[in-house]
Length: 146
Image 1 (tube, rainbow, N blue to C red):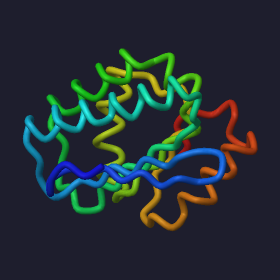
Image 2: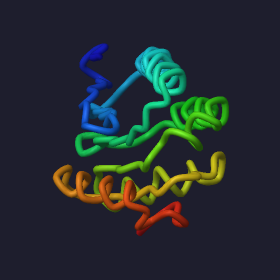
Image 3: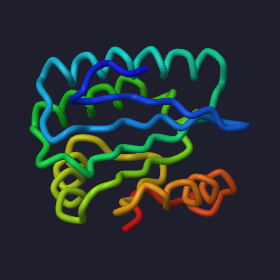
Image 4: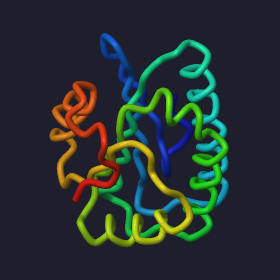
């Protein structure tokens, strides 16, 4: 599930769940965002229909900044799919610098309140353990973990 060079999606199938990797290039367009939302909706519909748990991993290591339009579009998608997120999402991992994390979530959490654990790592490899911890209930009552 890869739709271009600016934002790409990759699904990894685990035994009991899926991991959806969203990989951002340095820059992306409004069209990239809209295309990605369509792909995300298809993934969400499948997970909801088949009762599949999933984790989100946003790889933003190359990203220089995030537009307000992209944040608004993504927050609207999250609000529209609140029930699927509540029932099927395990957790969220953001791979980025601390500065980008603060920029992104400083704005994002003003327009959408996360309901599942979310953490920022500087390295992708740390996500697997976090996802497993979330599956085992370690961060059950947490949302944003700094």
